Image (cartoon, rainbow, N blue to C red; front, side, top):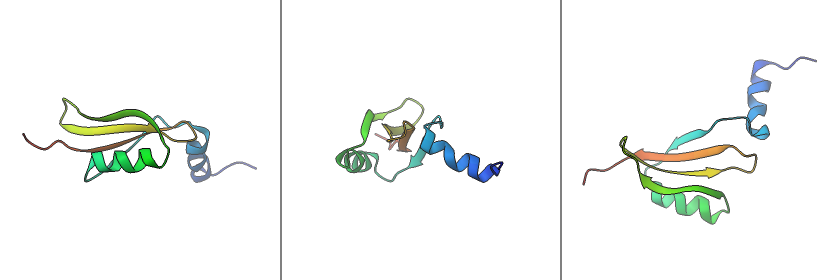
Length: 75
């Protein structure tokens, strides 16, 4: 039985087939501490990027990269 597009796309995260997800967080450092404490695999600790955001990265249990990002504050 053929899958619908929704079913096919919905199955991708479980297969580790996504290139990554990016979520906006109010406080990247606090979110990093929360996600790390939950046992996620850390790929990148919070860092200020030259393109104007502060972000961090994790790998989920299916192998997908997940990033949390927020605009960098001036200063």
